[in-house]
Each structure stands twice: as C-alpha cells, then as structure tokens.
Image (cartoon, rainbow, N blue to C red; front, top):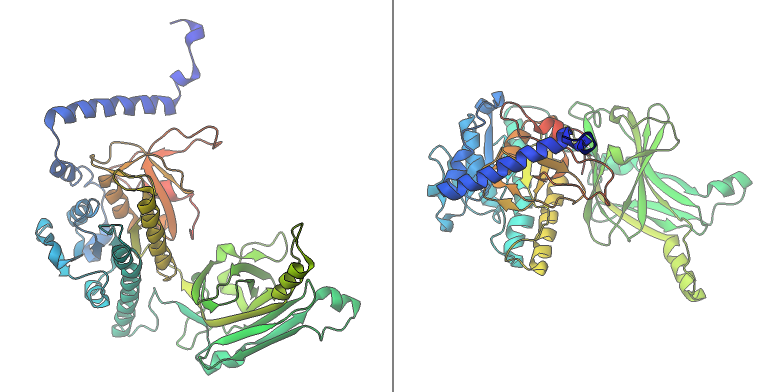
Length: 501
C-alpha cells in the first residue's frame, strides 16, 4: 500500500463500523432471498435472541398493550411474556384477531373509543404501552383512536390508580396531580388576591398609579377571573397567593413534583406564572392563552430565574405563586395607519384570564405509559394530505398524554419495515430529523426497555436506523447505538435527550 493512499478513515471506528454493518446487511439480504423469510419468521426471530436481558420487576408487573395485534404489538406481546410479565390486551371484537395472540394474554374485547372498555382494560394494570393506530385516515377513525382513545385511556388509568390507593388506605397515589389552587374550594378562593398593579418606572418617579386597574373575583362557575386595564406601557398586574407547603392529608404540596398544569381560558395574550421560593428568589414561565378552555403544562425546567446566576428552581422551596399580565411595548410595523396602531394598543391594555385550577404534576422514576407515535416520514400509498392529517392526530394524542400528568415516553419511529431486529445500529434523536426506517421488532424492543428506564421518563424522541447526517445541516456526529442483547442500551441512548418534551 502506498503511504499517501493511507487515510484516517481507514482506521476510523465509525467508518469501520459502517463498512462492517453494510457488509452484514448485504449478506443478510442474500440469505433472506434464498430462504424466503416470511413475516412469521421475522416475528419469531425477535422472540428469542435477547432473552438474556432480564427484567426483575416483571414478576409483579401487569402491562396493558393497545394495538397488540399490530406490527409492533404482536412482537411486543411475546417479548413481554418471555420475560415473565402479565399481559393484557384490548382488542376490538369484530376484528376477530384475538386468536392470533398467545393464550397467556388476558384479552379484553372492547373499543378505545369507549370509556367503559378502557375502564375494564386498565383494571389491575401497572403499565400501559400504546402502539395502536387508526386503520384509515378518516377523521372519525383517527378521532376514535388517536385523540379520544388516548384521553379515555389515561383518564381510566388515573381513576384506577386512585381506586387502588383508596383500597390500600394510602393518603395519596403516585400518579395523582396535587392541588395548588382549586377555585371550587372556599379555602383557595379566599387566599388569592391582587398583589400588584402599576408600573415600576412610575413608582420610582412617585407618579400616580391609580389609572391602572386590576380585579380578581370568583364567577358563578367557581373559576378565578383575573381582568383589568393597564394604560401605561411597561405596567403589569399580578394576582397570587402564599402556598401552604403541607397538604390537608399530609405530604408536601410541591416537593416531589415536576411542574405545573393549569386549566385556563384567556384572550390570546401571553401571561406569566411567577413562583417565589423560601430564599426570596423569583422564577417565571410564560404561556399563551386561548379563547377556549385548554390545559397548559409548565415543567419546572421552563421557569427562568429573575436574575442571572441563580440556580434552577427547587420545587421543595416554592412558597408562593402568582399570575402576571404585562402591557409590553409592541413593535409597530411600517405602513400601519394611526387607527390600527390605536386598536392594537387598546387590545394590549385590556386583559382577562379565567382559571379553573392549578395542579402540581407528580414526579416519579419510571414511565407509566409508553406511546408509539410516528416520525412523519412519507409512506407508500398514503397521500401527503392524509399523512399530514394522521400526524396532526398523532400529535394531538401525544399532547393528551403529556397533559395527563402521568409519566410518559413517546417514541416516534421512522417508517416501519419487516426485518429482524437487533442487527442494525439505531439513532435516537429529537427534532424531526430522522430519514431512515426501522424494524418493527426494534421498536417493540425499545418499548420493552423503556418500561422501567428512568432516563426515558417524560421524553419524546425519534428513532431510526443509522444514517449519514447531512453535513450542511448539522455540525455534529449522530451517535448510533447497537441494540445490546444483555443490557439496557436505551439508558445511554436517551440520557442526554431533553426532558419534558
């Protein structure tokens, strides 16, 4: 070999790894064409090679699988049974597919669109894996499975957890959201008051602040209404309360929580939740209100300190909470008439926010619900319009799960392919950048390993086969993980990914 022909890529481990995998893929393709691997043999090939991965929690864990007869579900069910999990499956009666499942699976015949079916399915369940998908792109089918189905499932599971806690005479249950402000209760109604209205600049100059108005009252629906008019730019108004850290039934109100969730209705203005701590620090997180009731989830990681140099907020030190509206200076586009400028100013001056309740999202170590969504890659036989529709409903289902307060992992795989799993490197990423497919067997394996993986809790991530990153679009090497048959490769794969996504 000539010395000048020697290149660093010749000994680069990434390059060598890719070459080896490419050679293996080529060999596998040739063997597959000779042996005519069927779909059934693909399923079976994933039931046995990684049984050395042990799950000591399996003996006392019952897992409900939605979509158990689908491409991912049929493999997942067998992998769960091999490790000693008890498995339940919700199957539509008219599909007649329950016979395809192993006899050890406890089958519940029903429909995701039916709350009563979901209530039966979640009975005595410890974990849920949602890998169901609508069979068509019809709105009714997508709503039944991806939207209403997820809502029914998480609500039924929350109710089941609460009933289990009641039967065990526990004061609280791990998945329960903790009341920060429930305005249907007189206790909370009496504690919330206007804490500030005016402009800090005017205060420094000793000018009159009476022109700015803010009121807080409880309406006929027992909701807090925070409204007013701020005439000066830079003025703000706050309504809030001191928090009693100890709950009525015992336990700390926010210590082990991961964030806040609120049910609110507003006016399309941006508001701020302000949290005060026992050491006098202030933290704020902005949210956009809508003209209809919606739930807003604010993880503590979204709260920014009032001053630079402060550390992240410690939930155990929260002593006060407030809602703030600011009449901030707006950028006026050129060519806008004086009347339009005045109309914009008038809109910014007035505000009205209605709050039903505010709760603390419980913390935890592991995901309660694993959801298989999609990365949104093009699919054969699916039009762009139908694909966009499917993705929109998938994202709606994801949001329903996040807002439930349950611990979750949302997996967005690339296009599913019928290949044995465990033989190709996988890329775990965030940001809708995946471009390759992935074996349904590999997705099933990720679901299995996420069940008891703390690093996967409250994370949404994409996954696909390894690919060469577009050097023009990214400045770093995507790290691929080889599925390891003897340990949980998922831990290192998702440990660095952003939480509360």
